[in-house]
View 1 (cartoon, rainbow, N blue to C red):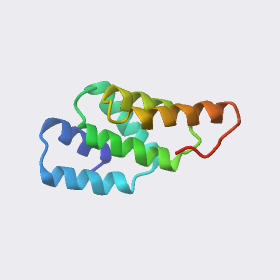
View 2: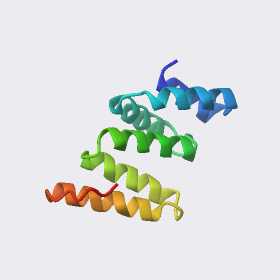
View 3: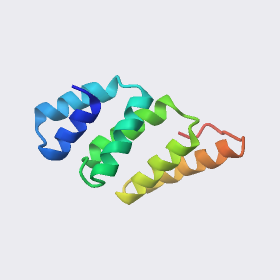
Length: 109
């Protein structure tokens, strides 16, 4: 089953089996697959994908693309939407994106 199909199942009917399958597939997915899944999932139903699933997906994509300014900013924005628990992490991602854009990456993660 594809990552997008599992994300849709999480949105429709969450179960431990679906969650486990999602975690397994997203863990080994490429950043391209993850970003594509997030794009479609969030366009279809912005609140549908559970916060833990979207946080995991964004985290894994950002780890694979640590210098992708647009991805870092999108992840930061998403974290802010579900804060305030993750506001400091969102701020760090935003600073990292700003530093990268200015050509001054200082290793913030």
